[in-house]
Image 1: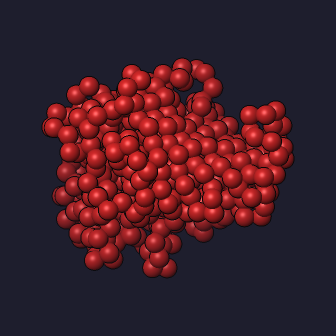
Image 2 (image 1 turned 180 degrees about the vertical axis):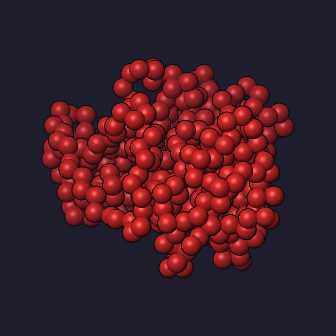
Image 3 (image 1 turned 135 degrees about the horizontal axis):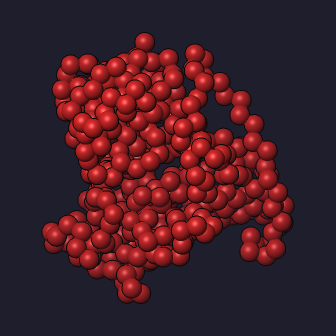
Length: 384
């Protein structure tokens, strides 16, 4: 039975609320430890995770428990690199909350080290495990909307709109596009701040540490294989709390369109994310009549306990499938469905967006320059 160590340290910033630290709960594994530097309430948190012991330092946990797998539950990419490299250096496998890290150069280092040690690194890009997007992908292959022409995606577009939205939520949208249509060939992007093009020295003030971020308005045109065109945008301040969530993906084809928009359903009150289909051959803004697509889950995890729905079901269900896929990847000696290479492709898109804006030209993939375009700027952290 695989031993799992969970790192979810409440003494650090930017934990996020997606439940990655709970992914292995109820699966046929032994959760040996929780790493958490916040003493108050830690026993209760360890019990919720299913962990037998608690540590304050991740290195002590790795050296004492020798887990087969390590979970990084914080969504702070700045905090991922050190424990991730320490785990992979020891030949341990990892399930990491997204984003994997802050720069493409860091991702290259992780991938190269994992290749040497044989570690499998999975990233919580949950759409690849979701019945919604698995169904969407199979319907595209079956010709449900004819020949795919364009894929439209946007972030949440709240007060983080622009660069921060791109890293925190846009990473999901860009990964979905790559999952559906394959690695991009090129892109052209515009990134502005207060209506003016950003400069290499610009930095956005972000809620949490995210690495290099700039701009409050982003528009991107992406070229995918088979002449599929991708459009991504994020504008600051469009979404207001309590309103309809704008974040989502629409694929338009010659015979219709498929669409999924995220929701902000309260915890424990169901999951309203739906896949919708229209057979209208006209552009999606022209009176498309959408109908809900039935979703049938046929995957079964042998030996799994009943899933505890004590947080948003979309995350609870798909975190479990992400954990199960990693276990299968280890046993079958294959890469995880959502692995470090796929996460690196998203980072490459993000860096390509900034490279296009700063150079004023189309950016072709793969990127030859692996350093983040904004890293060439003067030091200064998150200065506005």
